[in-house]
Image (tube, rainbow, N blue to C red; front, side, top):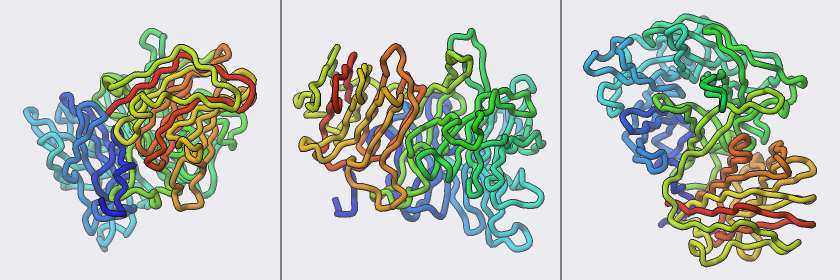
Length: 503
């Protein structure tokens, strides 16, 4: 291993390309038991640029096989974000009834095409595959959708099916104008404008809206009822600085998406609902073809993504999560994200109750998985916190001497969940790399339920069975393999502690 390589941080159960740059997921889709993942990729170097569509496949969403580049950039066209759909009925006419095509609707960024396209113009184009994604051809009449006048910020198409109307709805953005634009089609090639979505509220002059996703989610326990959700990624403007992803729950009538309610303090980002309260889960999109709604996002933040200290790759995906809507006591609906199954654990530690002494953290026994050897296994830790009157603290990827560790803290007085990575290991060499992140989290009957998944270079926290999510990249030293439970003062009780390891 050369001094520049950082295999100790290469994720075990999160997708990352073998080399070079990766950001947004594009067009994830399930076909015949195989998950296909496309993504923004620079095949030349580990920084943003020369953007093409990378490609990987998996049967379990955990172990991935990298495939040849699906849509390479050219001197005239970079391939920005988009979506993939299986045109099963050959509505586009780009395949045959016997060989229906896979369609990729992607963002073209044109350059060096005098007299044809102005440099920097962004538009929606189509590519198709007749062999399940192995080979792609660009449609001969691209682009299929552009703005008039042409825009340099029109991008990120995503698809959803509107059953009542029998047509496909395309969501796109005019990023600088911070508006989602909706279109409809029955053949994927000809598009009719429906409406704009730009509610009043949280907008800043330099904010870009990106990767809009309109999705219909089941409402838990309500007999098959569903609700519509509009997911919008913003950069800058995230709660932690840089990029972030929030959502609206509302109604879609086939033309217009209407939020169910607007926060009273419309310009306050804390009044909005966020898909992730950590800094590192952006451009969240949904899989096509799955029996239940399933999402995946890029584990990164545009503030410092180009400076993450991994090599020879840079960028990874967050864990996919199942999506649903949960009805709250006040009648509102919120998105629940439940991580996918990690499979069969290799080893399990369980304890019914742990009560650490004040100022003396309880340490996970050394004999369990060689003191949680994060170099070779992913930790899935589930527990219930009864915090008492003071903050309860869970520390993962910690060193025995206490110098290193990522703290996950619950403060019952403030009703807040905090992740502190100020001592997590090697910092990202960028002043925008924030270290302390907060999520509002109320107790239920004096308790908080947490699930924490730790891979080699990430911590993902799911609280209250996925009603709150926090995603963080970390770069711990190799000897930081300890897990502790404790409290700063008073007493705290940890119940139903279950630690599992997966490869």
